[in-house]
Figure 1: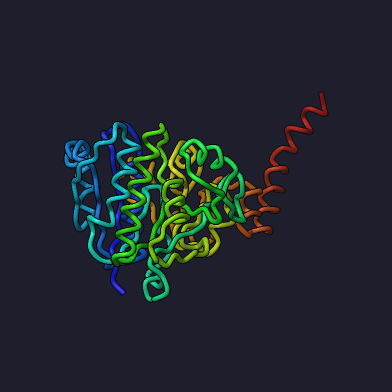
Figure 2: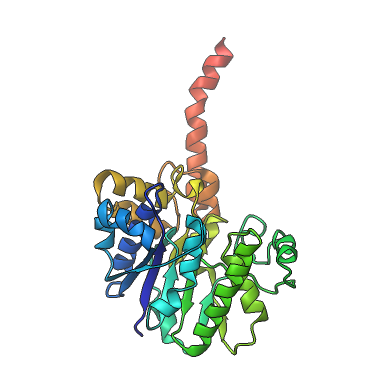
Length: 311
């Protein structure tokens, strides 16, 4: 079944997010060919993105410039996320720029048992088995919202049908987002989950396995068999040897995607590039390679240890 992939980008030239979006959409083109891709940006981003980032815009079938009136870039991007459903016709997948499609995922749209499909959030509080994180309780109280929330979904990848119930649900989410901003919070995920928890709209919400939103920044085990990797935007997403960080640096240096490194990481179910850490290899299901790597690292230290003992 046909669907559209949608990204939101609010970028005035002060960060790496535009490069992350370009890496992501080019990966989408490779693993899910033929899927239309749409970019939504705010009016203030137009000058930068049509100038220095013209190559990025060329990756999309359609670019939509929309007004966003919240006062900072993060809040504007969240505001535009709540407008994706009204701006793009047809069933869609929304993807944050820190996500990386690595295997086809169109099979989800062949199912008829959902209107909204999401993966429960994984985080440093509960990295493998999901639960509503402990830090949302004081935030719910700050908003004057009731709890607890039975499930807590990640908002970085969303699968949305083009049906009236979903349009109504997203409109409620937008109102909750503005309520959240009014109390000084800049978060899209808590308003979304509170909306899902309290709405009276008869919308069918399907909880997906982590393959459809593999939050490898929470725990690398989620990379095994993943269809979409999610690195969580921030210094950690691009630092060190994460696959996304490597691809962004390679893109910025050469204008190209390092597909051999991409393919190697996907085949191994491992969201990093060399040098590998034994603990991460173990966590992603490669115990033999983990032990071999650890032994190799120890052997490299032996000459140094021998010299110190000789003294």
